[in-house]
Length: 275
Image 1 (cartoon, one colour):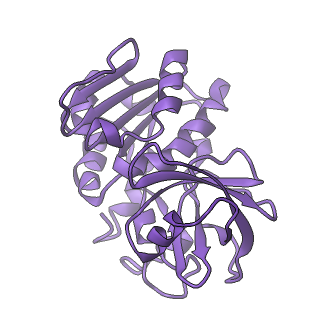
Image 2: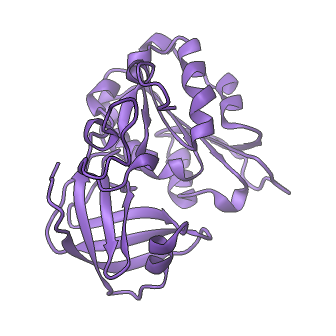
Image 3: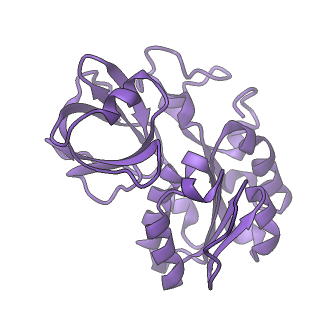
């Protein structure tokens, strides 16, 4: 983790616009940066401001790939940038998902909406450690089929058999994908739990999604028998400056940006108001 406010130079290399208002941006870095899944970066648009985001892939230290929602002044400005535009990036910040906690265990990833972005980097990292991780399952809930992120990548993973992938959407006029391991249902993401066969005491779980999802999903996983110290959630939505200076993220006396944003459920239970 760096405490420097000075951003590294980066350029906008590519934009995948396949999902409206949730585009996938690729930034070419002037200097290599190494992220682990769940850590976050600060991306700055000159003259406008900066925002925090978790990379969607952590393979390449020369580029940063992030799924960014158009949700405010700075992200809206980013959406207007041309390919080749000069931007700034700071990071990596925070502690990410503890990959060692997944070794020797089955992995259950539960994502909601844009929460799929940081879990995509975790899923990718786990599949690159395939010989050290047991069965990998991803449960992913989206508002509707058009909002599903990383559809191509997840389809390829499901087809390869490397992980079991199940989708659920809140609304759908039709469900065009239901073949083999690539399944989509209508309903809430936790309704998929009944379709997952797991040995709870040998499972490590990771959750990322809207705040309302945490309130039920985390304790439901614990109720299934997964140890609270092996259920992890990220509070990345609280990030601001990234270095504990603005206090925007402080919750229950804890600087989320410095001690998180990934916490175990065991820790979150001792942080009132965190979820």
